[in-house]
Length: 357
Image 1 (cartoon, rainbow, N blue to C red):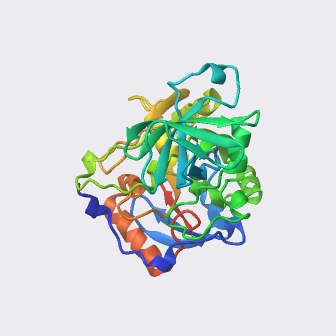
Image 2 (cartoon, helix red, strand yellow):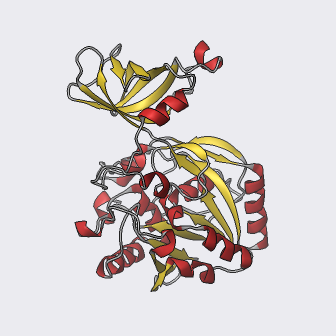
């Protein structure tokens, strides 16, 4: 497969730059997986499309203020870091003691003249950093020090919400709420699991009344979700690792649903990747945590999910490839063409699609 096989024309003015006034005010493209037939609905109609016994699985990861804007100590040159993940293989005495100094992260870094080992960076008065090493691919290993008792508190104060690169405005106060799902809990993502942004307490109440259950997994969404597939041959693309976790109650609920023949519906591609990465050959999902690089493309044999709720994704992206694996490439591109023709809103703050299996 070639990357260009997953390209499609998208007018720039269809890229949603801000959320709608109401979370559940978005449109919903209802697609039958078996036939590719589409219907135009509103997201508020979703509960009527589900049935008693369906199991919805959500990603409860929470976006952290991972974008740090600062300067190089001494020269004053601009410096920017994007927190990617804690460097779990580096355990310092300070970290063991719970102090806010000596905590090491892998970060994406940008500056006018690049970074080198030993360089010191300043992010306001309470947070400093030292570049330890270059890891390749624009990543650096960085050790943070804070004058506060908690590094988390220092990052909360110094960091900014990392809105996706296709949102061209600066983040505002409203993004702090709207770029999180209402059930976001586990801190660690640099991007929201956007399929869940449409859900409201009212939608949840309707689902409860209809006997639709919901469970949660965690996948810490990394910056790789926005990186284009640069390889011409799709099979040569390497995914960034992301940490995923499934609790035993969630794993058990999924196992019971599969045994009973009830639908498991993934809310978002991050949930698909988590469930499919943690299922064995017998289609059994086990509890635990892993670092996953699973890359789902057409030809993939799905073991767990039966239906999918998802937003509309970037052309030639790994996410549109995943949707194509589930729905079929031709049907996916046809559905996207219909969404463009009907002027659906695209990407993180855009409209939604329900692939009804």
